Structure formats: C-alpha cells, structure tokens
Length: 183
Image 1: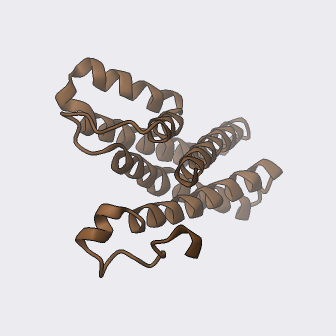
Image 2: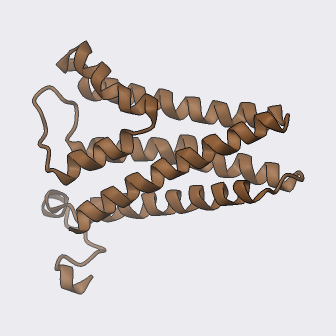
C-alpha cells in the first residue's frame, strides 16, 4: 500500500501542479505580463519536450505506434497518472524498453521537477515580487514547492528502499531501515 499511495499521491500532485501552472500562465497572458507568460510557456514546453524525449528513449525499440501511444498522455498532462497506474498494477519491464517502470517514472518525475516545478516557482515568485501577488499565484507557488519536495523525498525513499540496490551496494543504500516497522 505504501508504494501505491506514494505513486498515486505523487501523480495527483504533479497533475495539480501542471493545472495551477497553466492557470497562472493564462493569467499572465490576460494581464499582459508577456515576459512572465513567455517564461512560463518556455518552462512548460521544455518539460513537455524532455518528457517526450524520455518516452521516445524508453519505447523506441517497440516501434513508432508504441512511442505515439506512450507520448499521448504527456501531451494531455496525464503522464504521471499513467505511470502511477502502471506501477500500482505491477506492470513488468517489457523486452525492448530501455528501463523498468519505476526508473522511467523517476526519470519523468525528475524532468518535471527540474524543468517545470522549480522554474515555475522562480517565475511566479518573481511575478509576485514585482507587484502581482494574486491568490492564484500564491497557490501555484505552494503547490509547485510541495510537489518538488514530495517528488524529491519519494525518489530518495524509493531508491533507498530498493531491495536490489541494498543487496548490490549496502554501504550506499540503507538510511531508511529495512524493516517497515522501524520506519
């Protein structure tokens, strides 16, 4: 249940973060703040582009049809939900995929953090500091910050509690106790 909760909650926060970022980006456009609008659009476009590239690398040996099928959720903002569903259902690594599902989920999460969440916080805080501190902007900043923190924490936790990693490199893995009752 712990893994399922972490990936589903992480997917929900990622999707809410994207939604608040889009809302604030449209708000920048409507208010004529073109510099902030362009910066927000660039951040969202870079995040989407890197996610599409990660999907391509993950599925390129499975054919164009599979790449397009896996790319569609990225384009509509549902990639975190699709990945969470795959992890929760225990989807196994397919022959031809570049990485297992958990590694792919973590790579997509890292892209979201570094190309969308962190830049979004910086852009929105700069807009607030320059005299545009609406409630929506503050909510978006808080959501992006929480998403970034939660994403980073779960990535660290999932890597540290990986049984294969602990067996191969016990000196590196292990800051989280092995027994769940000790956590």
